[in-house]
Image 1 (tube, one colour):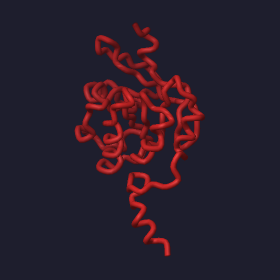
Image 2 (cartoon, helix red, strand yellow; image 1 turned 180 degrees about the vertical axis):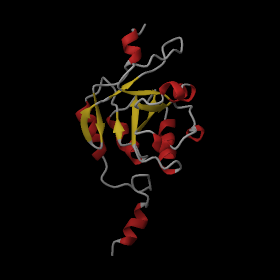
Image 3 (spheres, helix red, strand yellow; image 1 turned 90 degrees about the horizontal axis):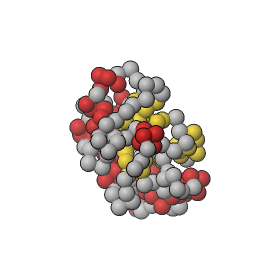
Image 4 (cartoon, one colour; image 1 turned 90 degrees about the vertical axis):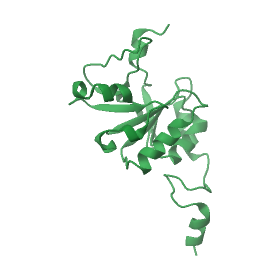
Length: 178
């Protein structure tokens, strides 16, 4: 059984933001086994998106960020995405890639320009692909070396496909260089 303190703060002390390892100022809260979310009374707090939807009035005036679960729909966001300084997407398992799509939708369809953070099962092998979908921050899995994980951003020097990070595919970029 996971202790109460662990259920409240699921964040690592450090994260990668804009290619740098920095102190994590956000406290991530998740629901316990009974589905109860306990939000600290002060500080920057990352809450589940569904919790925020149901408790917007209670959370008004707080420094709040939301975390989309894999089955949450960005289209259901009732406010401009840029209302939040940070939005996170949860990757509960390496095999669950729905967060990639959520991140890309937030950037391309909803025009989100703030910090887009990947949380959960995040490690070196996924970071480069996450950045191509628009993620700028990474809460690396606790059992992984965060400095080593940051090196994953440089695993590839060139990409064929277009992405949030590079809207033109390689064949179009090559035609521009004469």
